[in-house]
Length: 141
Image (cartoon, rainbow, N blue to C red; front, side):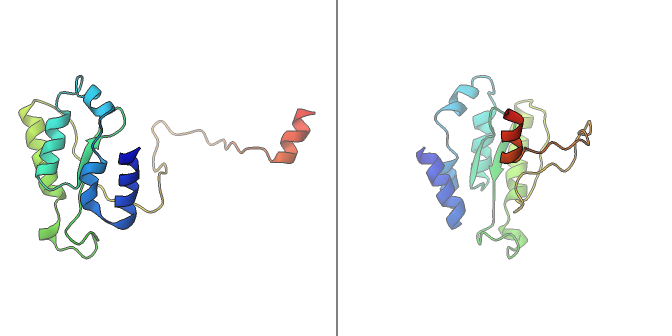
């Protein structure tokens, strides 16, 4: 719970250096590292290359690193301040050295939250809407 509170604090205040500690997990990452032996080497490579935090996303297989420049605002950073390519290259080298295949993606945050941009196979065109309270009451009678 303390790590969750620190994560929210770091993101809400822009104190991104706290992400290093907020993304440390003592519950599921040590357990998952038994079946994902490259987990901690990739996390450590990302942190050493300048990531603010790095972690196993859910149960895997994604290992995510969070980066930013010194100013924290990607729109005002100079390219020399950016770390995402350095972090990506460090993670690639470790993965390659451990004979781990995968894809490396550099993405940026969005303010619209999680949403579906594409689906294969396509989703059904049918839209399901919850009933209003009056419809639910009528259906129950």
